[in-house]
Image (cartoon, rainbow, N blue to C red; front, side, top):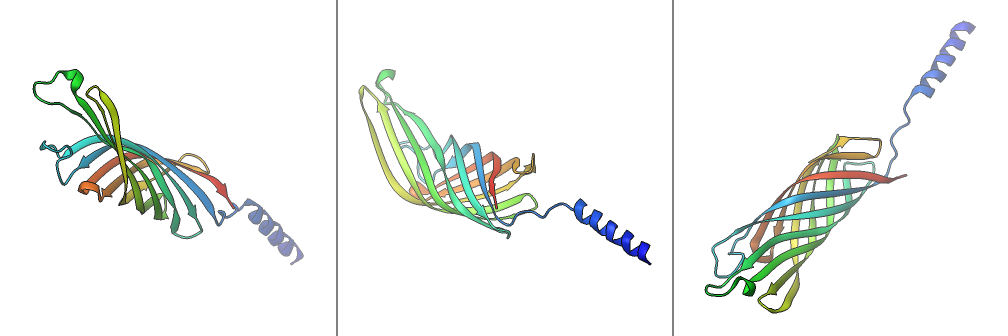
Length: 196
């Protein structure tokens, strides 16, 4: 009986030492993405033309606080170039053409649900929409305004290390400004710099 009890205690001690320590309760995640953008405009993107689509590019950063639940909360920001066009007039030399750029910087509250490598979420908040027109032998003209927008995102992360994931992400952005909808297939890189 004593041998059985000692053997059971030794086995229990061995099993308890061999168990993997449980995951920490809270963590902070930082996700960066880079991607092309396909943009659809409700109205022509340049007055006087019929073009309602454009190609752009962007990068974003999400910093999320993830308690030991499905929900994560944080902020989303970045920089997007939505459209870049050359505006020409008939009968004018190419040196007199104008280059127009529409870009944006989001600052949004982000919420996401995460489980088994999957993440689905949204961001809502203001975008700083910036327009720049240069060329034509004149000074550069810039303008900006704040608009409310929404970002929807879904991703899957492949584990590269204890705190690192990389994987595909799809973002859809709805800008109130001129009724723009942007689709962004992305590569996301997620790091957990802080666990406690």
